Image 1 (cartoon, rainbow, N blue to C red):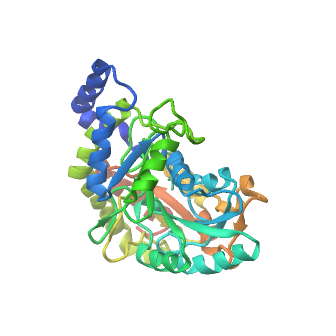
Image 2: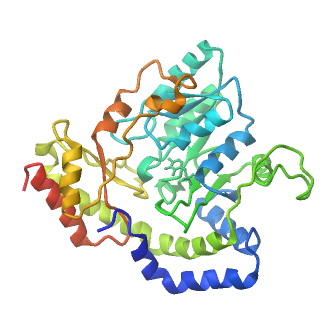
Image 3: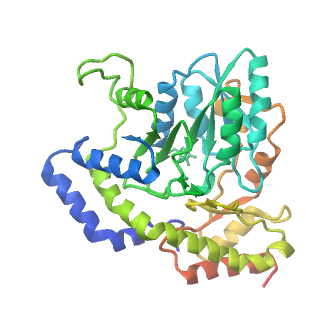
Length: 382
Ligand SMILES: *Cc1c(COP(=O)(O)O)cnc(C)c1O
């Protein structure tokens, strides 16, 4: 069993993917062009935003959004303490200060009630709070109704980090449409992955879209060799775009439903034991859909996670710890970030209790039962 079986996915999509790669090879157009622009149109239509701009990876997508907003020294950006490093790294790269705040212990996502006190704290340090990075962790959209309310009141921009969230939704609204700018990643193991690095931004704002297109191509002006601002080189190549078009169809037609079924199956198999063994299963609020980038549980405090992981590994079951360290403890941020005055207790606890199980649209029912049985046996519930 693999943690995320990309080889199995390829075996299902092989003919179409091979055709797409051949098509690009024959076209001689490897950067930009029709493959990229038609993918952008498809993704924008699906998400429901005016613009989709693809770029080199999900980290660049976050960086480009902050660049379009002119975020830099003297600014503060609110970031959840429990996320992948990128969500805060991009803030520091631009010379701004990330303020790490705690997350909700049921959804793993930013606790909207922490935003206002964190802003007041940053102002007290002479900083100007400008934006909130809201992460759709493990595939579940953050609490955007509440985040939007708070951010509108405090005049903060919302950057949705949908690197793990693509395909999720709240009601009729799709993930990657909740931010003033939203981003995603096409890293192979993400819900919609390509065969290398890739990323995208989504927005309804024409001005920001144009700025992002410029920053992503060396700050280009009217044409490529007219450079009007300092930018970077961050583009999705045609090969990845062609592959993504095949994967996108399969994602929308089958894979999203399939991961939902697998997540339900995990939950069904563990539910009866959960309370007695003290394991906390993932929670999806009413009206929300997760794209199940990960199926992540909280282990009982008494359970030694390392021992459980080794025991599962010995039975051929791979598991992962997302994430072992809260952002505020990352050495890279020492002296360059602030932590919420309210502390980050939930994030810190989750870092020691979280465990993610194998997840992929192609995981079989038998695989799920093998995983859950092994866990139940280990935790003394069979
Ligand atoms: C993967 C990830 C990113 C970065 O995406 P890359 O394409 O690897 O640069 C950013 N934020 C979150 C939450 C992620 O999971």
